[in-house]
Length: 132
Image (cartoon, rainbow, N blue to C red; front, top):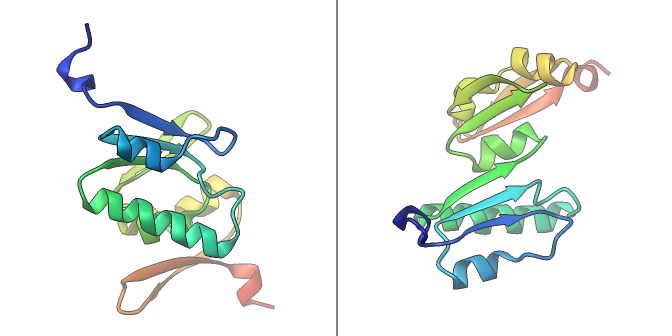
């Protein structure tokens, strides 16, 4: 017998599988776990998918997403868990935990974290691109 905590399904969506968010919604899932859902998408489809997922979160669905793109966390995440080499490096609001020092440690690349539009958006910019 399933406990009441599992009364609604949890869906795992990975790019190598053909699960669809619509199926999760139709089955009243409370949580969707997505493994790099935008890794094979162009920019436009990435924005559409993440905007839709963000709307689902606003409507009360729990979303867990893995990504290697700090800018996605800045734009779409309420909380960010940073894991590298099996170790938790940071957890919290993306604006608090995604720093130039953290990105340098995780990805071995120097970046500047820039704030745009009155700090509504933050982006990571590689220093070597700024200095060209």
